[in-house]
Amino acid sequence: MVLGSSTSPNRANALARHNLKVRPIVTFLLAAAAACTAAQTVPESYSLLLRDDGQTWCAYKSLSEFKSEASALMPTESARITYSSNNLTELTYQIEAESGDWIVVDKYSVLNGEVHLRRANLMAQENLQVIQETVVRGDTVQPFQIVSVTTLDGKKASLQSIDFPAVPVRTNLLAIPFVQVVVEMRSLTVEKLCKRIGK
Image (cartoon, rainbow, N blue to C red; front, side):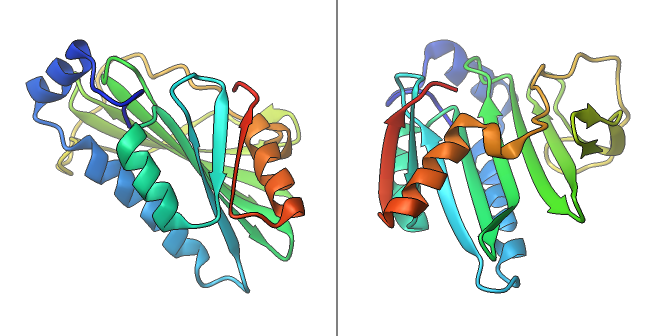
């Protein structure tokens, strides 16, 4: 994802320098999240993106419309939310540094009253993808456990001494502002809704 309609020189250089194909990786992660929910009983999924003002979130019922606008806007933040039986069961949130140096993809799954988080850290300069997992119980976040460490093209790697991107773990999914956009959208039964709410 790229903020705005054009890529900044720093970002373009960072991506070119490492010959990364970040977009396909991230698109695959979001598509995989959607596919995993397809087997549930009548799931409803909504896609969201943050517009280039940094405060307006747009929610889409149509995945194709979301993909079309995301391709044009190239947002630095996006999300996909899935409901089953009117309950939020899965949330995938993706954020990218404006420098292009890293992308974090968080997949929250609600299971038996607990929230399980699987985090993918994609770091350009280190050429690493680190998968971590944790469990959120109420307001308590358990320490992250490392599941796998690979290069960005999938080869096994060792974890170096690095600083992970400082992306906070959400303990209350329903309190996330962009989730409220989807809540309102569902109540209005519209196909798209944009609201200036910030992050």
